[in-house]
Length: 277
Image (cartoon, rainbow, N blue to C red; front, side, top):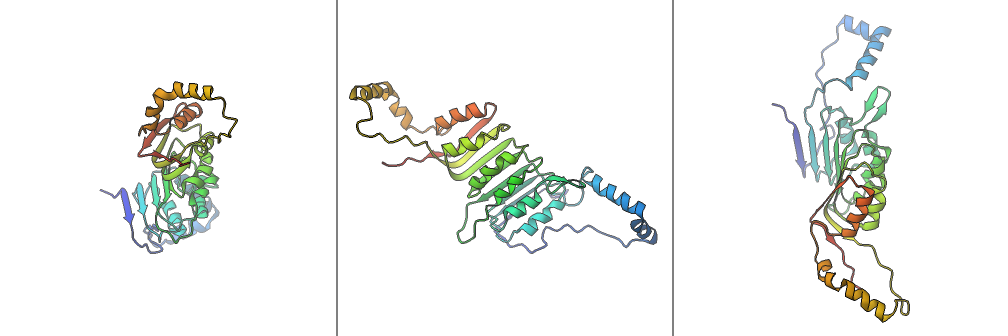
């Protein structure tokens, strides 16, 4: 039975930790002759092109989780492109991964077919940990697109940059945003370009509601109008003050229902920021 899930937490990695070294045997005279001939070169090219569509071989890991591994770099990320079974990658507090590193590994059409992490269906990027590291904003690398990526999870300081690029992910169906503070307007603007979403999840998110314009003295209407509004809304005041954990910000749900009518919304452990006047 082969290993399918690998999770690394709070550890140091050597430079070639994820390199895949395939066994090789000395080539015989006939093989050397074929490799140097034009016919052999053409056959090799066809084999390389067909490799992308053949059954995966080599490392059998399908899910890789890296949690607080500061030594994980773009070079390590590039090594994962040889893992042909890798379909789920979770990067949490991997401070040295850059936007360029992520962009170079994104699945894209190349000369010999699809290149990069072409089997990846789920990607998570989140920075919530220690101070002292330069913020790389690795999720900006998603701006080049990513073929076949269906699920994206963004956390902490990667949420803002990632939302700017999410519209370039044409196959995206599920989006999870966690451990961050978001304004209602920021979410609505981002979701206007994500019409293919089928699930949008908020986890440990602090929402900033839309700010009402200040009322200037003399422009707030008559006292009778204000009394009338209070009378209409008086019975509901207590209900509005109670936070519904399944629907912490109803106005956002209503806006998203119009933009994404086929999308399921999930709120988990979220809250609304109340600004004291």
